[in-house]
Length: 120
Image (tube, rainbow, N blue to C red; front, side, top):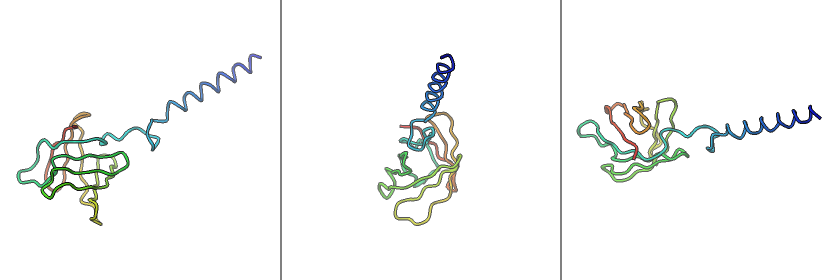
């Protein structure tokens, strides 16, 4: 009887551990820190950067307030290297380096300079 009880407890503990480690996202991992809406707070003079960027968990997104209006895009983030491909453009732009200051502030460095962003 003791071994059946021990076996049952072991099964319950293992199943609880497996259910707690799922992460809660479709990919099975933690939520990407870039997902959400970001507002540009500063950038190089004369920049054509968007005023706002929304990054969706499915790898899609939208720029708002650009010189040419709104634009949709797809994105990937590998470590701190962000690659964005604007819809209709067969080539991605150059990779951008992201540096998180905290959960709500980041800087983006690319060939155009450094731009700062704050989570909306």
